[in-house]
Image 1 (cartoon, rainbow, N blue to C red):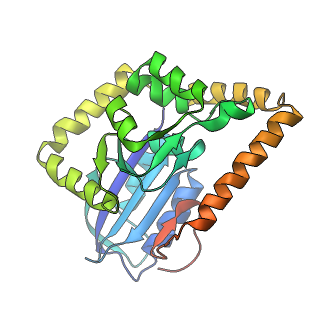
Image 2: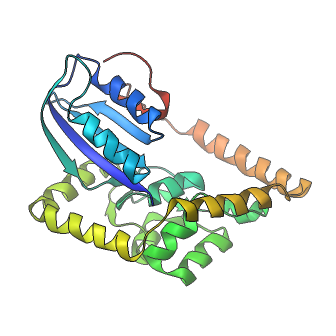
Length: 256
């Protein structure tokens, strides 16, 4: 089972190394995600991983590093926002969130079948529980890249936002459902109890994927290289702004 945690930590948590200490702690627990400082002096974090490890990080966050003083921690619904294209593993990562927010011009899909493979990092596990086995199989085996509107109509995307408003849509969603947060969290627990995604299930799928990857032929590799070059051209043509305030957990260093 995979768990996601979205926290807002308040108190004396900026200027004391909280962000990077949390990154190092999360890395040590095998978690992924990000941590950032907020303008109001708080720290916001989203982490994904094994439930017991996520809970350990939650407990650590209440204390923080030496010099920090945590006064309040607010737990929010875990969300993922897509502002550009998310293909293959990027799409799988987004599907692991409780709520998927997408901007209208973003596109998502699984091109792996085009080079004789399949997405093996959770795609079928997440999709089949969200939209049913038949629809999930169609998405995975077609190689089709879908627009955000199509995915919203299919039930894959939960919130469709105009371009440039993805982050605002997340906060709007949180505010809208904050009064029923207890009931929603309880219902999310019901969903994971009824249709759990276990670590053993994901590992079995990865093993099947690894075996299949070892059987790809030269023509499959050439197709993969063409797709990679096409993606690189798209990325190079786009203007990307990266905020230095957001620290990916798998690239933590030193700082505050």
